[in-house]
Image 1: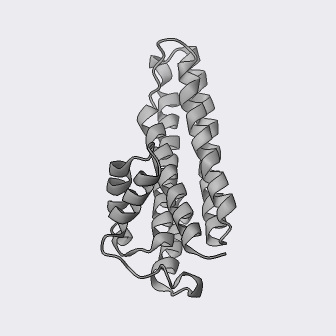
Image 2: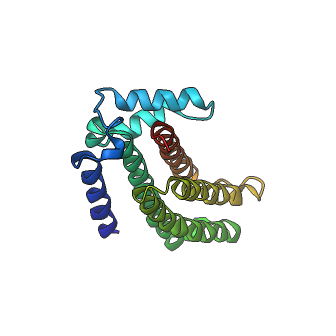
Length: 192
């Protein structure tokens, strides 16, 4: 996973430091770009969580000097970190599975498979984004959201079963939703 972090760090450097002709109209740094972006996304969707967007993006210092491309990458990197950390959490839960019945254990195994796929899909989404293939980037982020929803819903199939991953699932959905909205804003800011 360390090589992914280096890759994403390079990507952030690429978008923040190197000027891009196509993005010159949107690359002016706004002091309040995080707030403006999260507010615009929240205004466009009743299900978008403004506070989650704001607090998540503000945790990454470089995001304060980012353009829309940079903010999208920050959101995708946060999603990748969440998914990778969740894989580690699921491994721990499976190793210490004495508190889980066979149904919950099977759900955790399913979630492990879904999250391993989600990690790879987020990496693919970043690659598509960097290639300016925004349609595929958005499609793959949506697939990650579906996988996480499937993980959560697996536990709900048994009455009274509580998912130990609810917060992690919710956070990854919100991070992907943030990246999706920013990519949407970006694609509508760049004339085709």
